[in-house]
Length: 119
Image 1 (cartoon, one colour):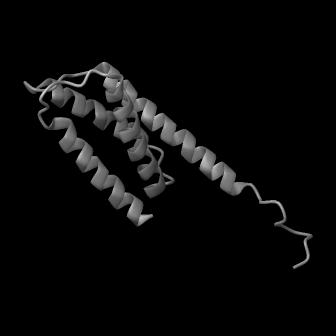
Image 2: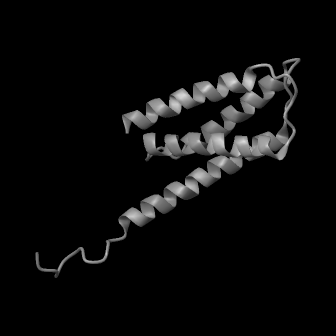
Image 3: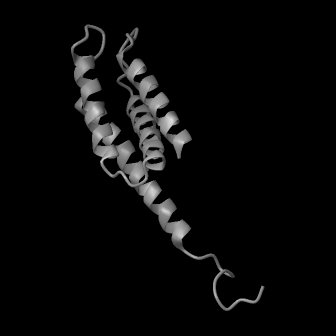
C-alpha cells in the first residue's frame, strides 16, 4: 500500500508541474481532454490503492484539479477550462468504477475453491 501512496504523490507532483509549465501554444484538441481523463484516472487509481478505506481522497483530488485550473487561469500562458475540470472528474469516476469492479471481482470465490472440495 505504501508504494501506491508514494506513486500517487509523485504523480500528483508531476501533474502539478506539467499543469503550470508554460506551453508554446494551448492544446485545444480532444487529446487534451483524453490526457486529463487518463492522468486524473491514474491519480484516482493510485489514491484508491494507497488509501483504500479513505473515500474522501477522490473529492480532494477533484478539488485540487480545480485549484490547478484556477492557477492556470491566473497565468499569462495557460487557460482556465471548465471542460478540463470535468475531464478530470471523468478520470476520477473511471478510477472509482475500476476499483469497485476490482474489489468486487476479488471477493467472488473462484470456481473450485471453497468448502466441500477434497484437497
